[in-house]
Length: 86
Image 1: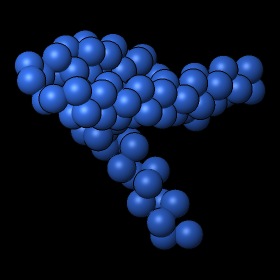
Image 2 (image 1 turned 30 degrees about the horizontal axis):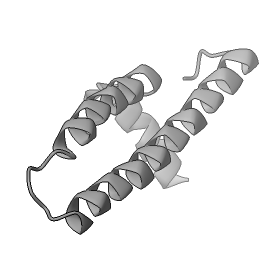
Image 3 (image 1 turned 180 degrees about the vertical axis):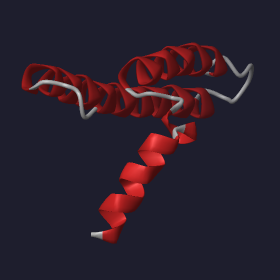
Image 4 (image 1 turned 180 degrees about the horizontal axis):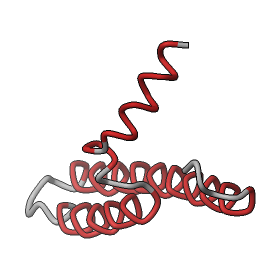
């Protein structure tokens, strides 16, 4: 992230906010689907399909916005430790 220019930083920030919106809509809609399922008799567990399919799409959205391998990055860990130190 250190080598990003101002425009790229703004674009990345917008994508991260979009991801948060996507996550909130996912939670709200899926909660409603599961509630409908529970209210209508809890038969066949049909909400699992939209929850799982949309969840996979959400994972791809996350990977597109964040670096999933940053968890294993020595450079990122050094940056984090420097920020914590002061």
